[in-house]
Image: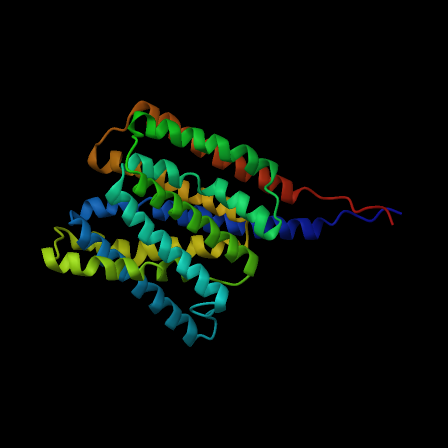
Length: 303
């Protein structure tokens, strides 16, 4: 006799996945405001790195202290796995700073777009989580979109900077995968990983003198927007696979130029708009396919 479809379990799975997508979307959207807010602050590079990194770390420490008072805070660093994940985010932050100083920005953006591909491979190798058909289809489409955005801006660059960008993408993908495997709440890990960036920037920022024409934008970015986005993206692997979370990082690449266009009237190239549309379509299609798959009732095998 066949059992009834497990509609309740399917509904729960769909709800969990939808919640994870919510974290990914919120994190990606907020992260896309990072560059425009830095531009609005009109700050020197090292001042921006120091202030936003320091405030992001202080914000998550304040959040942790507040949640701890209510008895609901997860550990600031979730054991050995949490220490490793925080270390990986630290390496990714330092790698990113190294990359943007030593190679072409277009190279950095394109290499970082390999993040979902790396996450899919690592998820399969480390936790046996096979990428879904939707993910397999979405990854190459998003890479195509990123390639259109970059266009002729992709230069040979510097091999050290390119390797730093590659290491950054791998570290983020590995951090998300290990978070997924551990099952632990590591919402603070990504922001805490920015502490070394602040320490690295401090001597340079103080040597040249802190400079920001509109420091309020920098404070809002580092104290609110950035930590919330990083917390959302750090907690998302508890609900959805690492490759899906990795795709959330692509929203910054797609949306940041649009915000800059709206605020600073810097019109992006036509191919950049086309590439952005391709990435957005791929992400929306991927989310729709995954949600439909998880909400579809499954017939249990015959008894």
